Image 1: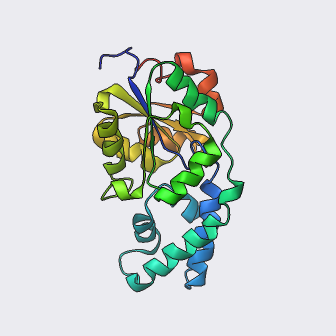
Image 2: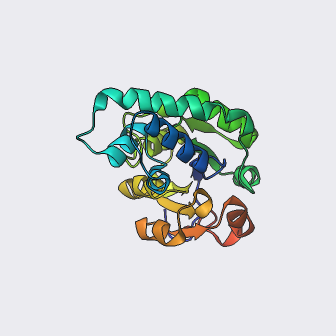
Image 3: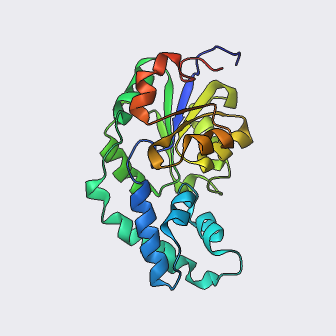
Length: 226
């Protein structure tokens, strides 16, 4: 796609980008880790959110850990996080941004690596299914972020090439996955990652949250790629 052209599709991460879950994930991972004797600071956990659970544990505990307890930790996180599902809330401007893209004729995908059941809870919280063309979940990809598998699946389902879309995410892991495919990534700080970190990872533009991006939509990469 040539510079200045409008993207045909927009891919959205969900956790921390459209739905306010990042710190819920942080606390529930912290509790699950402590239950198995791993006293990991919340700041370290927060910086790992956005990875798949397997990569998160590798990142936090290292390759020499006792892998026999990985499932217990992961299940402990899932059980605790599940209790928050009824209280999940969309981030400011999230549903309106998704609908604005759809109304402009762009194809919209949720590029999530959440489980299918968790994704359903996230979609209920977002309440914008009328503007969503397709969505991915954990079972759709062999590797989780920062590997680009989920992004590749979303592209295939939209039948679009990497240079025809923009990805919107909130973590450096989202940006890293996009960089590997040469997909333009717009960062949002709504998940608690700074502008500097997102830009340093390769985000082509950074906004406070979905509402900030929506209010600047006509001047953003979602309207015209740089």
